[in-house]
Length: 169
Length: 169
DNA sequence: GTTAGATCATCAGTAAAGCTGAGGATCAGC
DNA sequence: GCTGATCCTCAGCTTTACTGATGATCTAAC
Image 1: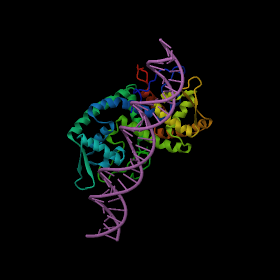
Image 2: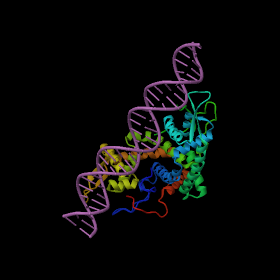
Image 3: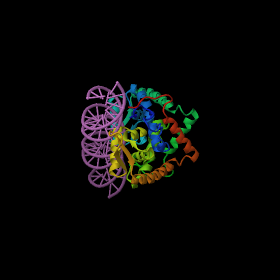
Image 4: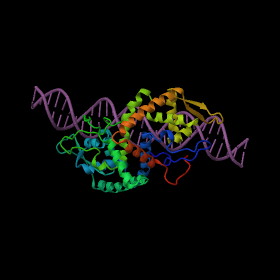
């Protein structure tokens, strides 16, 4: 998950160049920068979530379910843009921890209605606080205004391409 | 690699809410935004790299080696912040394609000196052009100035924490 | 109404990325 | 000339995510 120590910092090298971070040829590569931003965030988030016994992905599932009002597994998977089969495994874990409940859909017996339990909502609320704190620490080097701008840029990048629109599955 | 279609766009739902993207409870979550920015970039980069038969990670290795001037495997791994054992596999692949060369280090027989071949440099140059183009397309929604600002913010996030400094391995 | 095709949840198998731990070879300090 | 550290390699594990198949159920066309 995190590389060695959680930050990319590296000691000066034996004989050679003083070792830069990020290394010159990659300092401008978006893929590299995004990847390591994620690694840093994970290094902060994981310890923050450990007390709650859930992962960031599980927290995301809880958030979507709590917001969604009786979603089927497939609907929840679509909102998170994760695979239907991945959702099965994710819900198995959350259900085993007593954080979500699967019930048969009243009008369609193929579906499960998935909802957080009371305990699930409680854990979610606390875990959300913890991860927001982790985010805040990652973003600390930027000012408040710059951090907001940064998030907006990210949202602009992942927004659907101008005029697409094909069925997904 | 990419989820369903490469963008997170999703059709309006059958009965329920019109389905937003990113979904409301995650629109402000940094982890979610970073992850999907990466997915979008991968969806653009992979086709761009396919003609060259290398992955983004392999391109990164080539870049570091070309810049580094006779690095050992361990040195290269440290610069990229990847595991030493991962580097072994990565170099096996690049060597099999004739893009890098392992030679014994003159003064230290434990080490390999790893360098791109002439072909490796040629492929690297072209592949770099292709991925820069993919980046440019991802960043298109931001203006030029905003894109630059965005990258600088990312660099600020992954910079080593203020006053750390412990040996890595 | 019955049947053909779509949809939902699930499972088995696979692949990529990354890590740990162990090994053998070599080097450096004492 | 030992002892401990360093470098490369390999085997095995974990996580995340996908494909494809199966069975149950729904929908629509007939």
